[in-house]
Length: 237
Image 1 (tube, helix red, strand yellow):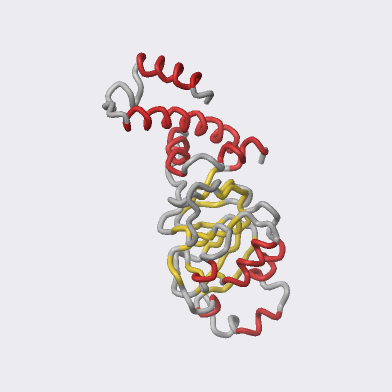
Image 2 (cartoon, rainbow, N blue to C red; image 1 turned 135 degrees about the horizontal axis):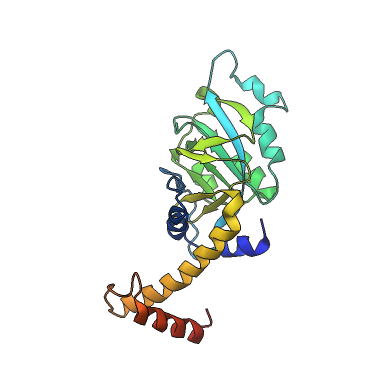
């Protein structure tokens, strides 16, 4: 991902991104049912390529505490191999009844320079995670260990997270509303188009706050387009 693309995506809302993706025919791009544990007002978005972990349902003869001694265990291996700047994304089958990970593993990801972590399940140790300066998105707190419900099976394969397809390398953008998924092949174009839309919507927001009606403004008519061009130049946007 280009540095310019990351910089633009860091300042664009998931609402705007999903609209721009919809213009290109992509409807299922927002991971539903999750939220950020530690909201960060006025901070840049989480932005990074997906590195994925897939869970299947646990089975008692395979999932016991002894498996964590195996350095090839996908959950533990993934935490140590997720690239710097990536987003660790977990397919937990939308099941938050056992934790997808906890504070120790999430702290390790933070210290390794990972951009953030996302699951459609739940995390444990959420009071501690809430104190980390590290984006962490989940569906609900869950104290039980992952082994009760989840069997870690694959790393860096296509997954579903919150019913959204996520392929390794797709660009994830997270703000305080949620997480959007951008196919990697069009990330630069989406960033540029969404950046332009954000500038226009800032203009619209200012005018609506002043008391303007939306007709002829949003979407814009010829007069509003001319006014926007003047506003943009004056505000150096």
